[in-house]
Image (tube, rainbow, N blue to C red):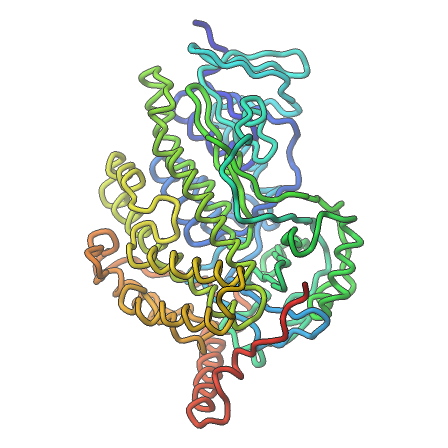
Length: 583
């Protein structure tokens, strides 16, 4: 059988381009087909600790240092350019009541230890397309697919232009508009989802950041500037993202990514995006102050139904990569993490299939299982988060479910990376992913956390059904965190601590100590020994003094606790339960 290429990759975003680079580096003949061209607008901009570790694994395993750049702000700036990234020092969530000013005490923010990037995808994606070509892949832009036919011997792709290609295997990395999913009706009869969401997003210039628009650190009490975080303004069954690219001293990019998400059941179907955005600003005056003097630089992109799923993701001669298989919502910035874990899981299978010239979906079964679970769990996590948006008190309790699981998952991934750096054992690395107890889940390995997640999610679902009051739901969540105790790396039951973590060596050491003594028989999956590498806090990228901000935040927390202890302030006053959110 004659083939034009071994592998055809549909879609030249970051996932398709990285996959093309890896496969070409490993000697496969690769063509990347894309209906559009680069550079171009793309969303999915926020890195998280999980995604940074996962790209380091790809870079080390396949000997392509460039794959690790999204997890290293210094290298992004040096190699891709000063416009390629803003900085992310924290996840921040500011609760808003309709028609009210946002109270800076209605805020939670959790700093990350090592700075992450806000990726300007236009620059970053184009860089990885060029990398794939440099390593041997062929790129065909403006190549719209007309026909796809798969048989026992391969796949035939016909383009609108009249060109055609015969290949051994197809990977569809085209996201929602997946031609493979359309051709084989993979979205039909897909598993149902709890979420029912829509979105509108674009880029602005001149957006004021939190400290300019609302309040400074001396008022909000965060140990990091919120201007240097991924900021979420949350409200009844919806949220707004503000992801700046100009929020660190070396950036030359004036743009800011802005996106507005709604639960369709509460807010109805999509409307004219500009009209809807302006109405949102009228309804939420503190959020509106970010946009005084700001200008939109692109047309709105509207996703009238944001979340979707697929009946299956793998066939004998094709598979869907990451978001081509399913997507929920960008709330916790898990999109890039899922993309990079999908690559870590699927690339070894493709290389093995190419070597053996055996392309059976059964050999990709664990990848299929991962996709099924990661969509299911993320759907449940996000759906209950929208329910928790009803009040700050409920959100302050619920967000700790996501955060505690994420901490455990990051510690597990750090162990996987440390083991691979020490051994270089590809088979052991594959086993770490293949044999994960909870593939696709936040914690990856923790029985106690996954039981906590199940109980917490059931509680929020009961609250949504009107069977559990808000106060009862908060009490249940606090009891769950208290009971989990030693099985969590931090005290998540202390609801007075709205900022949870600190970017210090001492805080990092406490996490390492928990990992080195992980309970429930999990020590071997977390322990890295006493001499694990420290963190570079990259203070040159920060606004203000990191240590001064931490000291200020600690002093404010201590004063608030003294007031609670003296009876002049109660925990309920610190976490007010407002009037019911608008219906």
